[in-house]
Structure formats: C-alpha cells, structure tokens
Image (cartoon, rainbow, N blue to C red; front, side, top):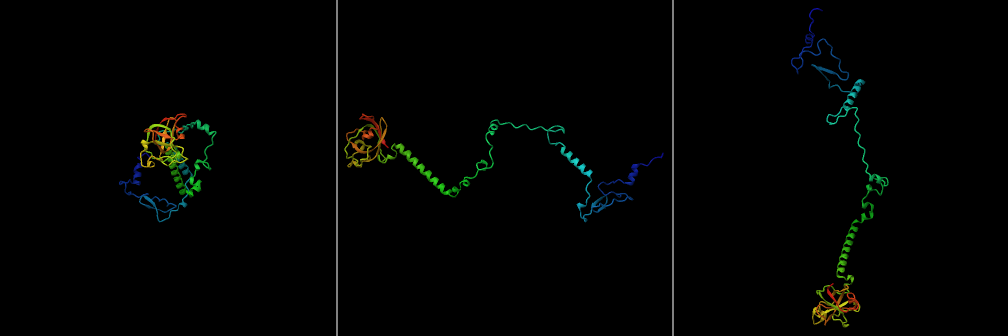
Length: 293
C-alpha cells in the first residue's frame, strides 16, 4: 500500500475509452465487454443498435399493460405544477408578495335620486304584456289591420287628400270674406276697384242686370263710369259679380245688380241691410273702398 497507486482516471479511460470523434458511433463497445445487458422492457421488445435502443415497431403498443406510476412521482408532479401556477408573471408590472393581500375593489357609488325613486317605483319586468322588453309588432297586436293593410293605407291617403282640399277651400273662402255664401253673393272675377263714397240704394225694382232675386238682400249698384255703356246693359261684365266693400264699421260683400246714373266715379250704392253693416245708425253717407271678393 506504500507504493504508488494506479490512477483511477487511467483505469477508467482504459476500461471506457473516450470517443475521439464526437457525433460518430463510439469506437469501443457499450456496454463494456463482460457486462450483462439489461433485460428488455416488459411492454415491448427493445433492440440495441450501437449505443442506443429503440422500440420494435412490429410489436403493438398497449397502454393498458403499463404499470401505474408510483405515488411519489404523482406527488412530485403536483407540487411542480402548483409552484408554476403561484409563480408571478414576468410580464406584469406589479409583483404581489405571497402574504400580501390583493387590493379590494372600491364600493359602487350611490346614485342618489335613482336609488330614492327605486324604493317607490318597481323595476321593469322583462316578461309580461305591458313590458317594453316584450314589445310586439303592431301587425301582431292588431291582426285585423294586418289582413287589410293595403286597403287601409289607400283609404288613409284619400282621406288625407280630401282634408287638404277642404282646408284650401276654407282658407280661400275666408280670404274672400264670404265663406260658403260666395255663390249667392255673386260670381268671383270682378276686375274693378276704387275709393269713393257709399249710400243706401233705393233703385227701381227692375234691376238693370236682370239677375236680382227676391231672396237677394245684399246687392249693390256701381257708378256708370265703371259700369260701362253697352247696347244691353245686362251684357256688362260687372253684372252678377261679387264686390267687397270696406267702411268705417267693417266689411260687407254684395252682388252687383244695377247701375247708378247720378253717382260720381268710384262711388257705390248698397242695399240697406248691407249699408248698415259698414256704417253707424243715422249716417247716410260714408267713405268706402271696394274691389273684388
């Protein structure tokens, strides 16, 4: 034992030669000569090839024949997975210590008026006939309109057009100031207008235009200057026209039925009922302006 001992490294290198060409199969044999190879895998037959082993693909692989892993391995794997889950994320800017409590969310702010009203008003229901969330189409709620939709639409359009026509007629009639009595007060289309005076007309019963009727109480006679001279006075274009006369008290409309021979230019004579609408009682002559209805 006092003499020099052989080097362990040299003995190891002599027994296990070092591969001088890495990446190539070793020059020596593995396992070493004289050693016994391990038994084949119980699941499939293993074949040795150089320094490695592979599973024979000709033998079928049966996973059910594998023995279950030992409990120590399962416990070790569970500990590893749990430690990975508890590991803080590297991408997070905020690191949380294991014993540090997570920040609690701030309590919701109260909305004051809405919270007060919610005590008296019930919350909206998502179901029910009166719910806004369960609203149906008006065609579904009114099936009678769904079957006659086209007919009702056409009827509505016709009624709308009729209302517009009536409204236009009333506006024009009101502008003329006679309403529905314009026809009885003469025809529209008088082309004359003037400023003069007016008196009560006590003309002959046989009116010049020969269009007077006993029912006519609002009639007028204009001066001969504007009435015109014709072989037949009834041919005058002013006969049977509606004239609108404005006096101190108001406005009146009358039908032209006669001519005033002794009137000045611009003067017009009115029947007594028509004259009393524009002049005060006891007044026999008033200034007026007149023109078409």
